Image 1: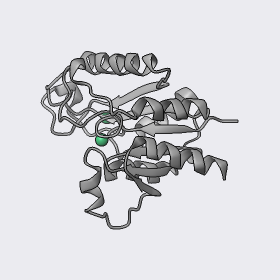
Image 2: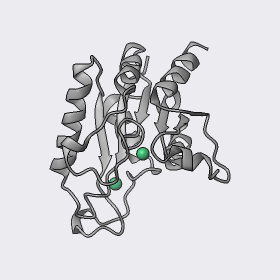
Image 3: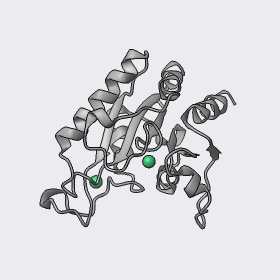
Image 4: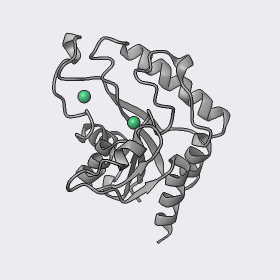
Length: 190
Ligand SMILES: [Mg+2]
Ligand SMILES: [Zn+2]
């Protein structure tokens, strides 16, 4: 069967939201993140990070730094027996300062480019998949690709919950990623 995935936001969802994360040492996993990712792994779901990293376009850090951060996250997860199958990010922003990244693109969430890439490269079926994040744009991404969208209250999530978006509802609003994992695993059973 075509694999389903959890499209996982990074900042404010998997790790603490600290603004522009420019050094691997500043990565701070939430205490439940390893358990949550391991639960997805065991359930046979692919875990695909999808994250907007406009700091690249803004000149705050390079793509090499983003890759270092992701290798560091990978190492922390691996030490707990968990893994993320792919790390996808959008380095662009229309108002960026670095010319090669300063443009509108189809991969900055809520646009669906990163999910399309997962479909192409990993054979994932988005319509059987889930998106988890702390921003309405993560839920809008879910809607755009036909996945279910779960808003977590970590990061910007509690503030987002307090500002409902016209015409956009999450399939679930939960306290954090491990609660999102519980919701997703239950929904797989029915
Ligand atoms: Mg986020
Ligand atoms: Zn992009």
